[in-house]
Image (cartoon, rainbow, N blue to C red; front, side, top):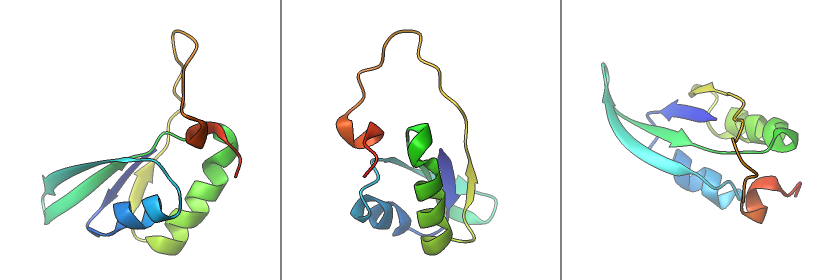
Length: 82
């Protein structure tokens, strides 16, 4: 999932909720923003969307299916259904 936000604290808040992510700082037409990249297994998507709706209801996000070309070696945090 890719999340675009102007809230500089959203990445920290999502990490505090247990989501592993990468933060990219950027500049949009209206100023500073961040793009958060979160790789999440399908069974955890609904929980991530719920957290995003609670923490940043105005954030813009997109979701896409990733298909590895070989067996992935994902950290347990990305695939566990906690």
